Image (cartoon, rainbow, N blue to C red; front, side, top):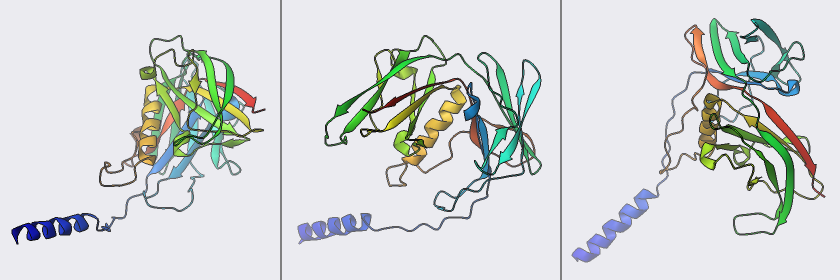
Length: 274
């Protein structure tokens, strides 16, 4: 009888562990979110300012259209003003400005009595020589398709933080598996050995454009935290979801800010799958 009671107790415990639990979530305060990018390519430079949403909120993007946005080129004391574009729902430079290697640029955003600031040095670019691709058959965890490999060189011994952005047929890929980040833990020979994009298959006829960015550490840490958040399913064995670490500082006001500022060089290459 004791053995039967023990088995019954284990079954009750097993089924109780599978019971779905519904949590009552508190309403959260909305915070401003700033996502700034300043590169050597003037066509890519923009600042997006919006309001935050709850982790479980599926509502649409909420842009802030009346912020004061500008960048200071510290070495020259020059100010680059931005204005809101309804078409892109972001702030664009009033003039076709771009960054230069070795220069220090500070982004300022003012809104609702708050002043946010983030700075960075535009580092020297690595080398991106070419792109190649090869067809791979379907495997258990890999779809069939053509896979892109980057070839180049990283000649630096420090500040090796990189992001690869992928555009397929004029569409920027932004799902969680499309955020391709690597640092010195991959080794500085990552490009010389050929950096293969293993998570994105392409089809014949696809036009693929690759952007290779060298980041400051703060921007890299934010993007790494963002990827971890996107892979967080809120399950029993995952940590509670939390916002990535912002590299902005609050200069004036009392409302914290989320987001990041990325200043760095960008190299671009394109290939059409034939």
